Image: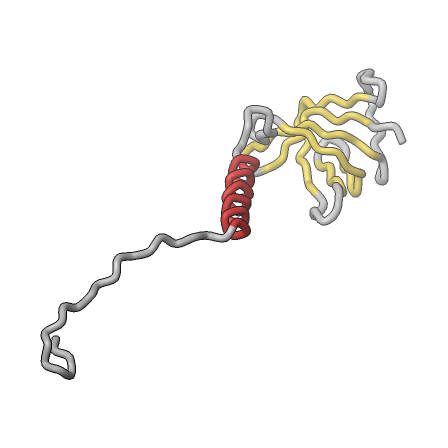
Length: 132
């Protein structure tokens, strides 16, 4: 490259200058990474997570009940009512934990249901009344 006077000049390539990050940027980046990592960690299943295949429990209010066949529970909103097929060996308990020979379940009664996921269906094997 020649200048106006005809002197050959070398092209000056600038060396990269270090980039300084503002403390706010560093804090925001560290916070974002911590949030992502905590979310990922929180979402991981644990040994205490309910596994419907191994058995789980839910609590709700009886919406429909057909003795020996079906139990439909209203659980906390925004969930849809949950349907349970009653196991032939289902056991019923009162609020004190005593076995009930004749369950006498009615609509609008609060219960805790222990169930297992079998062939895509919730199969209840233990129903416990909850006192109001």
